[in-house]
Length: 310
Length: 274
Image (cartoon, rainbow over all chains, first blue to last red; front, side, top):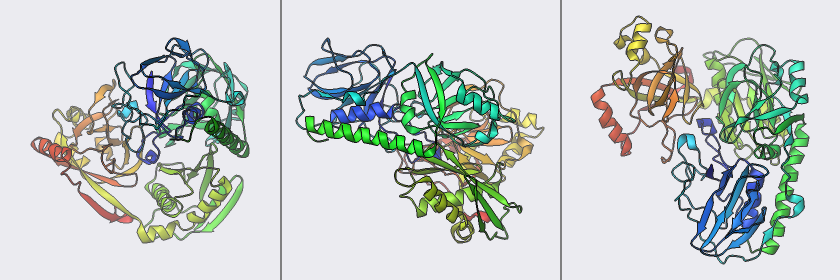
């Protein structure tokens, strides 16, 4: 499935509107940087399997995230790079070989009308993107007009390219309802490996593995829910909320995956292993700052190769 | 009354004047601030569904939105707690918590000065094709269909919070005399605007979605209109007053709504009087 996404639709969560937006904000941001775009330009998010794109006009694009073995006019492209696409080209993607989500950014950004401040597609409310739905063959993507297009290949520094492993460690901050779990339950959650189930999508990742014991029960008086929240329903098996998650929920939340690690989870697929690692607020903030520095580093390298952001 | 606020083991205390007409529990109220990742915190006023507790949530939401909009990204009021989203690279958690602790002590001033709320009239065509379960709800409660309508429209309902789908109100205050269990088999497609009952709850489906509520009617109003300047008809903290309309009126109202010529009936009242 492919959808148009940007950073998401903030400001309406008090009205029950999920933020949506890209699942992997790291790959998305890097794609926009490599394309010479502003950080919030709308891109195509491809999941598991990519599409084929015909270019009647020349363009400059960037591809980041899972390796979907992209080919430009039959010739293999470099993942995590920006490159020039001559008019009458075809850019084709296959199945993801590592990770599962790939971001295709076009210099200038995809020009669909914003809905409530965002171009992100939210399927459930038929909002954003093209008619609020997933892309289908025959769709035409209008690209906001960019000035002269660069010709240079714009590769991301090797040190900034993440490796997608089949077992990942996700840092979590315990809470907000960790006090509703037994000591043993929390120890289980932090020490056992969990497996990503086949029920994983833009709304949530359902896991498989050891049961996390509640003190009395799983239900709470519904409160707010955000991407990264780890709900433990009555079954005792963790559910991690993702970009399209509802804004409120009624299951106890044992922990929250920190922002920078949510991007890693967005690349996990069924059968991948997950371990949760407890971290402090300060460590999480450092991780956020590190991520920000990566963007700055990529931005300045990109600017020295291709001309200023559009 | 003295307000105890515990943050990471540290307890803050503050003197809070309680208004006469306010039903805040008389025992010492423990307010907790909980971590939601590195970019969120929850101010938890209680663990029960209670209109007085919910009023505190909305008061704090208003203060934070009015006073420190540059320091917070978004607030989400729920039944008994307020979610505050912030950027820890702009304001540190401790700093934000201390700010909030200070605002908590001024909740009563807000209550006295500007704690107004809105009562929004929701016209509903009950029964028939719009409310296929009205008859069942009546039979289940051993009342007539007209009595179900009279009871359902007898009082305004508090919008405790909005969630589940965009614009879906969690309403409180429906009479148990028309409480009805959910359908055994949920419907695959429920039209937007449908008004239903599930147990002791009543609500409106803002967008077409699947669901198991007993449908008793439909409103021609658009609860959620993404292309409107204000996309949502009501906010958490408002009250909704259902009003019965005839099936013949539904179409005309729907047209007015579609052409943008319908102004919803809204009354501003003080929260205490709602």
